[in-house]
Length: 377
Image 1 (cartoon, rainbow, N blue to C red):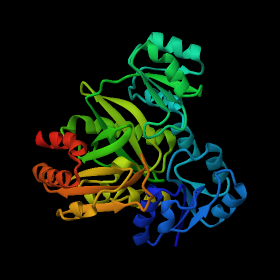
Image 2 (image 1 turned 90 degrees about the horizontal axis):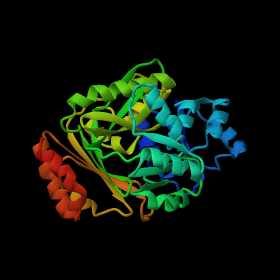
Image 3 (image 1 turned 60 degrees about the vertical axis):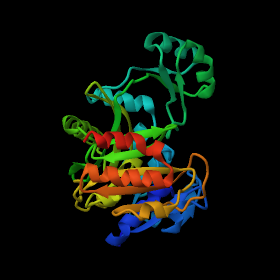
């Protein structure tokens, strides 16, 4: 029986463990927080990312290490790679941690991006702003996710506030993209080079955090092949093994690269019920060298993210083909605490179910853009 070690003990680690259990796989998560929610379903080692004595014991108990989130120090991943197998590899992790390196790779591989410039000082920010113009977004190069480490400049008067917001950290300035919509593709690559993608999905965010995902994305046929091609190029360039997400903007029918996540991803949660083999199971299969599972959609699906606190589960569970996921976390503002997925045989049927749930939960605002998209299908 194989054991997968997961660096990070959040909800993604929790869902990996739940997906791997039917395959007979064991898990060991490591996290600096004692009440990390993955500890409710798998053994949890509490240790700092640079506690190499504890990590040595961790490495000795596992067959392969993987990631629950991308902000594990790159040097920790590299140290582990010298003591056990690590998938995806430390190079992929390190690149995804640096927005400048990530955007540069996208362009090198033929994936267009918004205009961007390196910002290492206030003077750099002034120069970049004069070139790129407003509106623009200043982003720290590292440690940013769910809208963190970002400041939107609407005009030049925001320059000082932007620089204070990033506290002088190495950053990049990106041109604001007036996108038509946001989409993402979840890809998986095995150690033998086998590659597959899940259907392209459309995403909606609130306060920088994913609020809802519709799968498959409407009117995506013209974009899906291009998204798959870009994802494949990235996977092969990095010799990537496992699941990753490629987040994209759509502007005038063209894809622009936003960022990648070297792990299973929030916009792929619908795959648990909406496909034959979820992103979580496929990640387990990939890192253990098992054949990859089928990634085709079985139905139309919508995923609603619950941030801060959970609503009443009964309103969701009363619907046919509705699925509830409680992450076992203490409620806290801005914290992902659970999600629900609704599935149906047609967009019209899915729209009807989503309207019922949104009314029952008092979440009409969260569901409104998804309902509008479904109405056009």
